[in-house]
Image: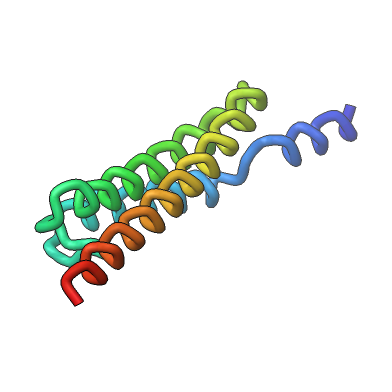
Length: 108
């Protein structure tokens, strides 16, 4: 019986991970309302894209940490979804950078 209790403790996520995920979510919200951005909000789509991606990743992280308790399949899906969002964000930034480079090249 003692061995079963030990394995149950190992399988549950650490409360520290949940706390960290909430701290990151609060930091993401502060990032959204702050005027300091990776891409300034003055750029119509690109400026909002970084805010949306940061918030989305923070929310997915919180949901993933809480789904580890009872829904390991959902936790795995959320983990893949987070990485998918990161890949989409990197591709979007690369496309925007190439577009800006192309526009600058036209005027030189």
